[in-house]
Length: 476
Figure (cartoon, rainbow, N blue to C red):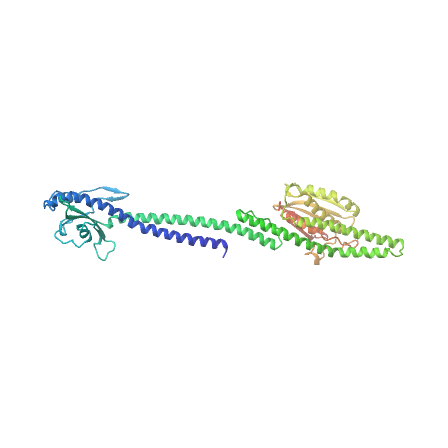
């Protein structure tokens, strides 16, 4: 499982559990909160009505007096109220009064007059000077049929409790408010959960993207590929810089070790030839042999110097991960400069050079590297082209990229060498004298092409000869 998915799932679990707990707490508190508010209102109502009922209870006309008529008239009123979107047309109060013994002497519903309520908590506690209230089901099997009863004492002129007035109201009356509040809490809880999960998803994606970029970079470095340090932020940026520093130091050490080993191996052959010629020159030789061995020493010395120069150039290119300061360049100008640089060798070999170029837009690149790469291709063609032949250089469009193509009329590439011509130090014998080059020129071309977002190829051409191509596509 990817780390981004792990982070998201962990965050999801935390947010989901927290959201569910909060929703449960809020929803669980809605119902008791609303009922507490209703009970507070019933307390006030009961005490106001108890004061209004005092005279009629003292004078023994509680069931026929002004209080009873007012309560019955209230039941007939059309309230026409609109409470937060819910209509209210009539009273849902039940009001009853008991005497000092707990016997019901007035009931707004008219059903329980004369019954003994002395054992109900609202009456029982109030007659003893305490706060009396109860919540009782009107239907035993229905838990939602509860009715809240709140009582207030009725006093005579001497402060004695002579009765109890109870106001009762079904909890169903406030059920719509409770349900709506619960829906609001759950809806906004779901919105909050969704927003939190979206934030978590974005955060997990960002973290995964940062780590993924660093992982891709590390894998590319491990595979020996060119890789640019990705743009990362915060601690990921610090980690990337640490990886880049480690890569640079490790590659530097390995690079030096590899090149010292390779250079030592490649230098053995020319040094042996030089040493052998020098030993022969120490003895008696005729002028012809002496001149031949002196020429051999000179040729092998030049080969060593050329090998060292090209290896240094190749090392500089191979060690670069990207072009530092690319600039717009015309490939045709690079080819013209390279042709001028090779003019002497072309004249010595008796070979003509023809350049054909299209009118193309500039490419982003390094002028020195591109010029040297074209020089290497032309020099390679000179080595294999027959005296008096022609080398053709073409600059043309290749899709979104541009191609420099160098064609000669030499013997072409043997089948066994087709897949190895761009290997470091791999070289084919020259047709005229069987000598070999340093084997670094084409490798340099391939590295320059990669740095410029392109590629290098070398193929046989129909009718004889070879075609070398340098394709560039940008600043790599």
